[in-house]
Image (cartoon, rainbow, N blue to C red; front, side, top):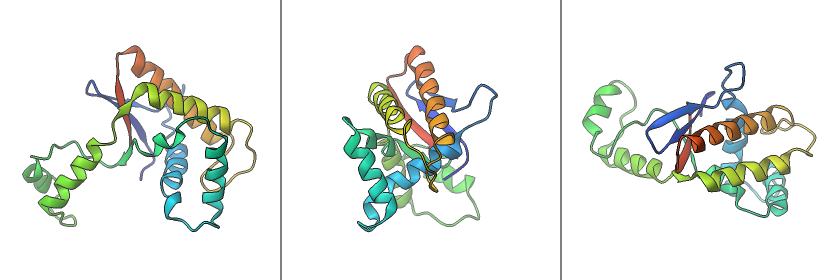
Length: 170
């Protein structure tokens, strides 16, 4: 995944997840959400799994929804755009048309109600505030700040009439 995060909204726009200085805070979101999205594949003794299980046990809602709204890369295509995709990425690793269509369909499934995402971000912020100690996926200052900036982007999207959103890491 990447260093920049963009909130994609259903009215066809993107909002860069940037702070008041214009810095995109994607790294903090990327590190946290990427590890969180893979915990089910880790051994039951892994520190990541235990850390996120404690977080989920303290949660009263579905904070894991945040792992289902992410995707990575420049995938501004429809399932009928394989020829265009092939021309855009000449010389890169080949991707069959079947795999291309499967990828596009999976990315289309990442859209979620902005109200659900807002609720998850707000609850996660409440859960993260008292946590101390850094890990490779969490920094008490930087991760929390990144989610606050995401919350601001969600509020902006709501004010502009967004109903569904997803996150793109580039």
